[in-house]
Image 1 (tube, rainbow, N blue to C red):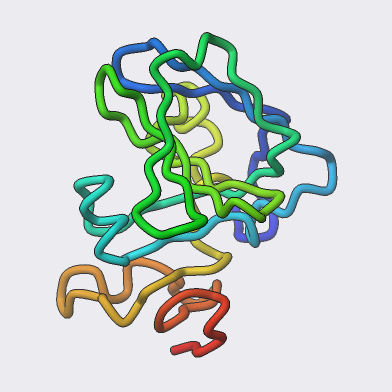
Image 2 (cartoon, one colour):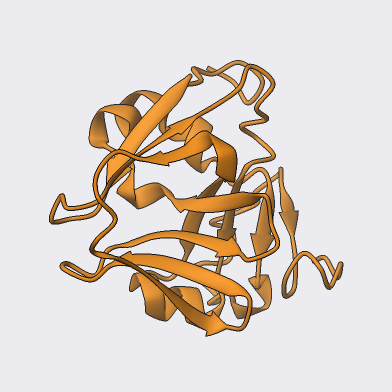
Length: 163
C-alpha cells in the first residue's frame, strides 16, 4: 500500500453508540479520498468529540443517507451556520456541516469497524484540509496530522493562512 495505491470503499456505513442512528455514505468513482480526509484541532471540536483531534471525511450531502429514523438526531450550532449532528440518546457526534455547504464531514470514529479495518487509510489519512493547527499541543499533537501531505491551516480553510 502507498499514498497513491490503497483500498477505497464504494460505500460505508456507520452510526451512533446506542444504534438508534445509522447512516450510509456512497462514494462516486471520482471521489478524492486524499483530499476528502482532514482534521480539526479547534476547541469546539475537541470539546464536542472529547478527543484532541477530530478526524473527518468529507462526503457530498447527496451521497449521505440515514438508514434509520432520525428521531434522536439533533443539530447543535456552536458557531452560527455550522451544524454538529449528534444523537440525543447516547451523545455520539456524527458529522459537521456548514449550512451553505454541499458536503459534510463524517466523524470517522462513527464508521462501522469492518470499514475502518479495511479502508481506514482511505478515510483518515489527513491528506486534505487540517484546521486550527495553531492549537497543536507541542509534543503531543504536533506532527500527527498533515505529515508530508495535506494542508495545515492556522485556523480554518477560509482564512487561507497555512502553516
